[in-house]
Image 1 (spheres, rainbow, N blue to C red):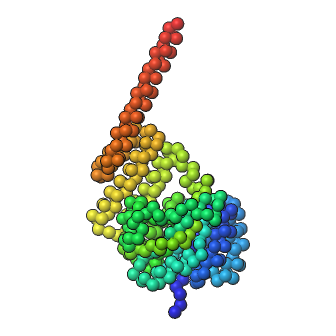
Image 2: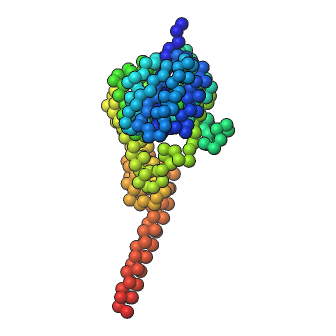
Image 3: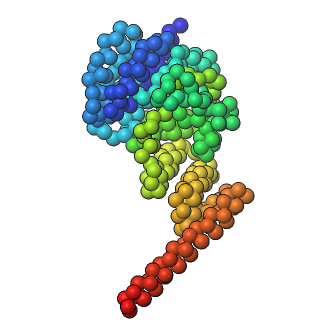
Length: 337
């Protein structure tokens, strides 16, 4: 029996330093037939040259290889471009600064072949620091206690499911049923939810308790620059928009859609609540606590945090106000002298 084609999408942007390592991991992957579609998302370094250099060796290894070039529009837009050119029965995607571990595609494809009712399968991942790619720091999925549950949609929506790129494989028949036009929300920083949520809403999802992907933490990674309050709030808003736009796209009863909106509101109110604490933003703290109360998400611990930090922020504001008054008083005294 002929094996189904697996398509691997690889969005590439200025990845000249890590691309060769990823390509070697594809060449060493045992599964064939394998289609690799690389989307050069407006790179300004030597990414395009490297993509061209790997053409011969990839094709000699039996990989069906395509390079698409576009202006820079971000991760979601690059994946969107790749989706419209994908021919595989199964689809996976990865980041070029990570790498596949041996058997990554083979084991996930085998599972989907053996379980035709399953819409998606995910593996675990080893997380590495960029300084040591031989000794994993930990396994990514260990923190998700519901990872073996077959219906993952609500866990993913709440942030309680695994969304690490490179770990997932979806059945394209199921994706096309959920997203007939293959059009996803083209977020600049994010693609996993747009691919996973539509499938997991309608179809079972399986988890393989084995690390088949190497995820690398970089000191100057995509989120490393999110250090200010404005940066963090912008990042939260980006993520929230991805979920809102993706949920809007999924056909579901009105009551379930409203439940989605409520879950998204709670999830990101909580993130903004913690951001308010980190940056001592009293107004934001009060606003997000009110939202959490509205949705019944103000747990005992949240209430304690709110009371404690509200008191601290009140004292800080009082000291600032008193300091300002003293400054004005002293300035007036000196002026009279």
